[in-house]
Image (cartoon, rainbow, N blue to C red):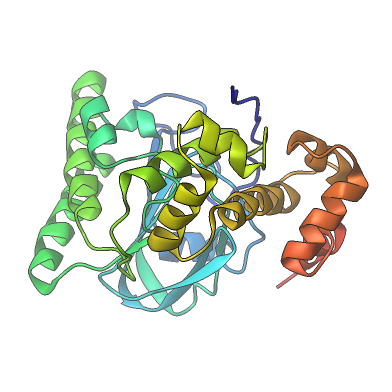
Length: 297
């Protein structure tokens, strides 16, 4: 039986400190909902930052210019009107902010009511990162964003009332964003693949053996591979290995934990085995990867 024993290390950020962003009624020390302009981030030196791994959602939209923003080591080109949604625990890195103007909304899943969180798959790490609205959606999204900004900056309501107003307005915005098509749109994903994907997300630190997942899901390894190839274009075993590599990269980039200890947390029996696994799939060693990703931009 697969049991999740993984512990994530989430460190680093590129947002204003609590002193720079006054706490609101969601609580202290850090506000559960923050809304800042890209110009403010730029003034605070966030551009070309080192990787950071926040425990919050991050929504980014531009009003003008262009921005490249990396999520889990993949760079996304954000154009005006598009929405980038990075989930808690994903590694982010700002590109050059000099040519971009827009808004960044940062919030915890707890800011959403439970029904909304479920409806938008708030904590789905496989959800599309970049979404592009149709022309008729732009005005609705701008109105929802502006209303949320106005209420967030106002301080005329009782704290409990303000909290509920912000929660409802945030729900309107994320429901609209979640309904937008991803960029690029992928193939439809079947039930077998989705069950396998969720099992890997839950247990990748405990086993990298395909037959373990097949047994847990009461199907054959071949069935899992067919479903995974159809959904994402790779065999099931490769899917498992890529998830392990991603977590290793996240921890190498955003925590001070020694590479040997990271390998141990990911279920490797020795540093040598971890180094070999990582190098075979990335072309570099864990230590070299850490040096490269943390090098000044």
